[in-house]
Image 1 (cartoon, rainbow, N blue to C red):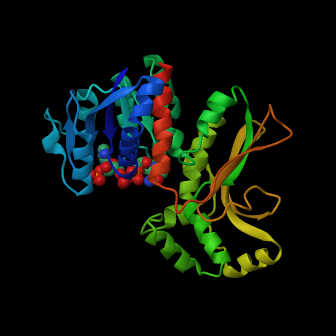
Image 2: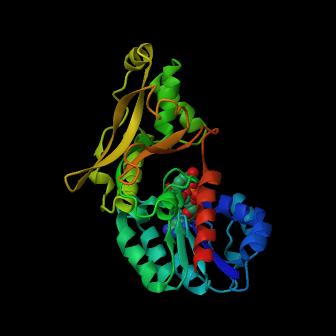
Image 3: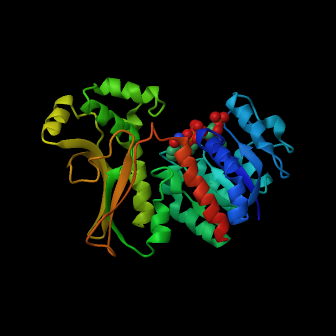
Length: 346
Ligand SMILES: NC(=O)c1ccc[n+]([C@@H]2O[C@H](COP(=O)([O-])OP(=O)(O)OC[C@H]3O[C@@H](n4cnc5c(N)ncnc54)[C@H](OP(=O)(O)O)[C@@H]3O)[C@@H](O)[C@H]2O)c1
């Protein structure tokens, strides 16, 4: 089957995805019978392009990577992302615009428009999940399409699909883990004697922390991911503001060295558990010892341990071992897996 693809947001993640789709095109065709053309691209500052007969994706990639506009590639006049969704006649819309923690916009509008236009909507944007999961999932179902978001938490690791496919009707009782790479790198480097400030600067130098690192350091990024997990896997609508949140600013080098002497480690622990009909979601520093799966997650490693009703005597851990810094390629793989699963299922 021939899929028409539109990219709403064509930054690091979307471009890594476009390259991955190109690289895997033979397998897509031979194993899944999927061929494709890219019919729409929307950016913030690099223009918009639509061609229902197919855009030259290599040229679009080169233009954006040189900081140039793609608008002259367009066969039709387009002025905004919603035009691109409508005029590209896409079967699959990849939404990868910047996250808006407070409202989820404009990504929620993009996903809604994609589903209303009859396309599958696939996103790495956490805002869509915490602000509109139920609405968008219901809309997708009513249209016979898919709303998928595997890469919103733990990049390319199969988190949501594990529960959807491999553990049907398992009730998630609780989860606990490390889901913010920046804070984990900072704490790991402090254990090797580096100061908090130098460790933050290191994270900025490798492009993993923003100029203002407070989103990571104060636990907001981890909170939106906890909220996404609780919303989807515990069926309990949860906003980042609902998460009991404390970041890592109060952890001193002395605390880290004391813990080290006791063979323990400070981690920014993200968790949620069911308690008398409610879900208690939390992000806070916690001491872990070697018996915890979190103890060995150093640097940019991350992972989550789950407890369910169907496997009550043991937990399941999904973890990603440290690469250099994680990043768009991992995230792109989650989107790619969603793409195949969405198209194959319909
Ligand atoms: N980077 C990661 O490893 C990672 C991991 C997990 C999830 N995510 C999520 O993935 C999404 C994309 O991340 P990224 O790293 O690719 O970000 P990015 O490099 O900043 O790219 C964002 C893209 O969105 C475009 N854009 C900005 N405003 C837009 C609008 N109103 N409508 C349409 N496009 C718009 C930007 O265009 P201009 O450049 O022209 O402004 C750019 O092409 C975010 O939601 C992020 O939270 C990223």
